[in-house]
Length: 247
Image 1 (cartoon, one colour):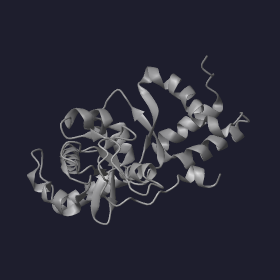
Image 2 (cartoon, helix red, strand yellow):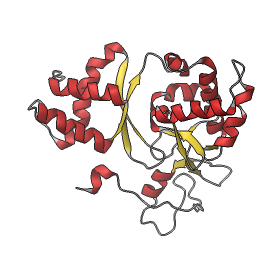
Image 3 (cartoon, one colour):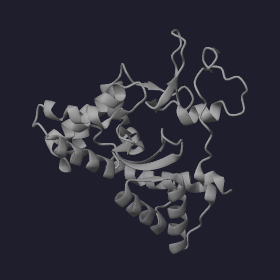
Image 4 (spheres, helix red, strand yellow):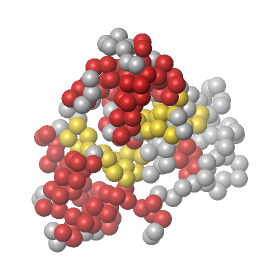
């Protein structure tokens, strides 16, 4: 039987609505805070049950707090998702048509890249090819800065990648639009853009970099979990999620 929605749940949801995305450590801290304020029971291992109670009430409104992994660091994140609209057009109230087209074309470049990243120069070069209304490079830079600020894309050392929020919230759109290009991680089964790929031409599975670090941790000779061929790529250092590092 589903738990009743209490004031602690409502406070948690209000925070999610203003922030949209938070990592697991932040979510656990918020969970603790909401329970403390409203004198509700707080069990450290019951965060997902607490969120399930909220999701049960959000379902009729086609919304959900969804959990997913960051391709960049392997940490878990929580995102408030609007399930009624899964297309980029949901952003039309915040972005103009040509700005949305730039975003779509940026997604195109990122998905078709080998490492899930695209340099800023390549993105800026498509600003004057837009069919809606061309953007000057300075205007395109401002749009990209807004997309980073709104947590739709990430920027690091002049390269853009899809943010955790974007991948989790727009997963149906990405799977539908890039059905022949997008593969899932062999380990966690989520969309894999920033990943390592098995060299075997008959295999070619993809594994997220953080999943590679976890799967091959402590193995002397890493072998592909699918075809058993030697895994030639550099194994990233395993990074323990912050929510576990202090336990």
